[in-house]
Length: 461
Image (cartoon, rainbow, N blue to C red; front, side):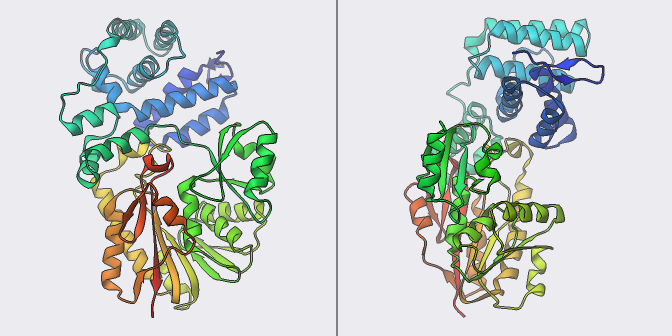
């Protein structure tokens, strides 16, 4: 791989590994999300496709396997990885990641590139240390294993690279085997799935077009609107996407609009709508007849929803900006047929897409967000008409944010009950997923999709 194209301030070109090292260093020092920094770095660069792919793999892979890499490195770095300069630590981590987890890169190339980077960025002492550590690792590569006889939480934490507190929490909530399966699934690459805009084309028609164009694509088993694309590049760069025939969305997420079960002519409120995937899906299910009010806290996100609706040819979507807690003041009580509260959450169901999450979240974060979710649910519930349905969903697997929040709400609101699964989307998920609090809890291993919670609540009076 040439690694050419990303020019440094001195006019020198960066390799994929140097770009990855810079991003990883920034992530650690600034606490920024890796996807934002990586996207910015790749946009500034003009790396060849293979090099951009390698840089992406190194950034996400290294972050995903962070504590396992440090566990191994600490055996070979005399003072331990914590004492190293951040860029040196990032360089050793991404080099070890290639040695342990990537089998397509020759080991001598990994060492050689790391030493050259260390010489360029540091001094001879650092490059000598990097060379010594990596060559020592290669000599003892067979010993890079996590012992089987560790306590369960330690073993799972190190084998599958998750914080020990989170593993302990999942063991307590789901049992040891399920906790390990969650961690293992979180390290899989996410599938590429698209939702078909059925106001324009049927799923079968879209599948046929994709297959005729040489893509490897199969229908989703979870959503009747979904297609899994196993090869075919970035779907956002296709004419199908530009023309509004498809949207990029995870399979689990596609079940939410279905659970809302909006019909043509209904008045629907999406309380926390950005980036607008579920909003648009509801508009599509309604055949663009009726109205969907899409609220979000941030005005720049409101623009994203509007652009999405325009691309998909949906005129029924109206965007508004504001705090979801204020919606009850802005609209008449009992004025909506359907409400979707896709609540802000800890995001612990989407770790395979955002590996940073597992290292930055704390138990306190979960406690705080659960309190907000309860307040939001209580606040918007008065806007549902009697007989109407409120769908509560999150992209987390944390019981306190899911069935715990719903149970507390139902205890305080006897005029609400768990509603039937009219569209059948939740029943479909329950073939693998878990029934929880009258809803469904999808874990990442169930369908190799995002972890999600969905429940339907009907207002009685």
